Amino acid sequence: MDVRYDGVSKLFGSVAALRELSLHVPDGAFLALLGPSGCGKTTALRILAGLERPSAGQVYIGSRAVTWLEPRDRDVAMVFQSYALYPHMTVAQNIGYPLRIRGVGSAEIARQVGEVARLLRIEGLLDRKPRQLSGGQRQRVALARAIIRRPSAFLMDEPLSNLDAQLRLHMRGELKHLQRSLGTTTIYVTHDQAEALTMADWIAVMDQGVLQQLGTPREVYDAPANRFVATFVGSPAMNLLPGRVDGPGAAFQGERFRLPLAEAVARELADSAGDRAVELGVRPEDVQLHPGETPGAAPAEVYAVEPMGNETLVELRLDGVPVMARADADFTAAIGEVRWLSVNPRRLHLFDAASGIRLDSRSPRQPPAPG
Image (cartoon, rainbow, N blue to C red; front, side):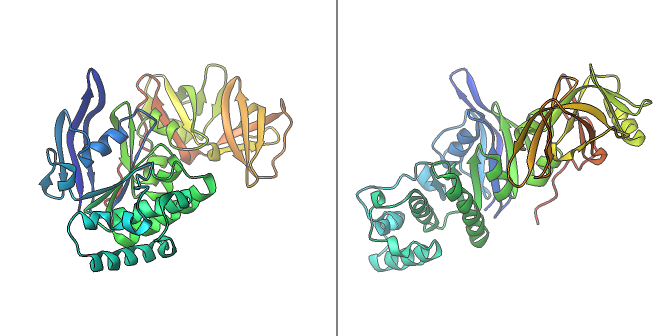
């Protein structure tokens, strides 16, 4: 079923943890609530689960208002960061517990437990206790216990954060495949942008209790709505260069540098910027480095070189302004050496320096309708 927040706010004393959140998650979609610690994402999830009451607003699952219903009456299953398994029960008993408390017969519980265990490839673990399992196995058991309920929605609160990096990467693929197979609406809380970008159909970026942007992973990455989204989504973060657009001069003019731009691009950006102070945004992969003086480029000093195996991250100073670039794996340069820097004119972003709001419309601003 679809899930909807309608003007939901939450106050803890005088602190606003959530501010007028309005958000629609289509039936069967995988939505990631993404943001830093304290941004309100877990509060939003707990309100949907019924573990917190909103200070204002309504929550719907399908056409049913569930705002004031008890958690057990909402038909949702939650997977916690800690897995929350019962240590005295076997894996089979943990998985089957939601059915047992509903009064389902033993034979039917055993059948369904076996079915879900095969789906998650944990049928060989059913007689073990949680203490005998690895972190990845515990996580699968927690998922199995959620799946066996066949809920209207899965709610997941950073379920991969306790796993090591390699297992976390593996489980991202497993979770995505599982969600697609089941077709169950899923709301997934994370501070890890890689999880959000690789797993979700939709990303809701949050900061300080406010929804900053809702879109597909590609839309959020390619057309961030504001400075916060631009710098939070993407690793390394988007470069932001303060200054003004000089349309007639076909350049971006910083305080101490001048970055040439194609004339048509400069004119288009100047129309968006007007006379205001702006920040020019460019992703590291859209920064090109040249060994010698190049038309349409500006000189920059190499500050640090970080070989990553498959690529090299290069930190430069454009007349003192930090700029990060992605270069080929075989890139080499000495610290202090000069490289000429240019930018991909089709991949530039413009933000108001005061408000941080995106000004240009060079990329699609609205996500496509779910298919």
